[in-house]
Figure 1 (cartoon, rainbow, N blue to C red):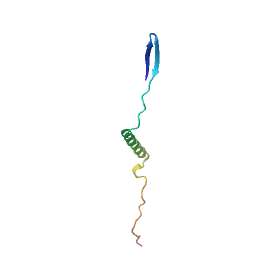
Figure 2: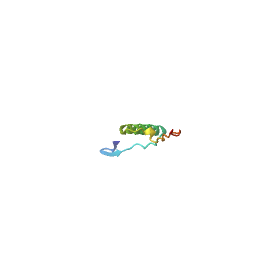
Figure 3: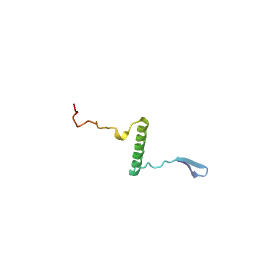
Figure 4: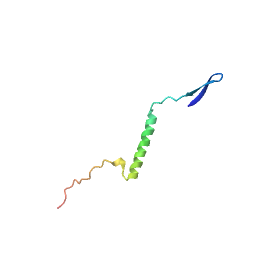
Length: 67
C-alpha cells in the first residue's frame, strides 16, 4: 500500500509497504485440496471419465467355461 509521510514543512516521502507473507496454515491447505479435488472431478466429467475410478480391476470369470 502506498502512503505519504510528512517529514517536515514541505517535505514528504512516498512509502510502499507490503504485508507480511503468511505461512500456509492447515485450514488453507485443506481448502486448497478441496478446491483442487472439485476442479479435477469437474474436468474429468467434462472429458467423460470418472477420475475416482481411474484404475479399474479386470473382470475375469473364476468359473471355467462350459463346453
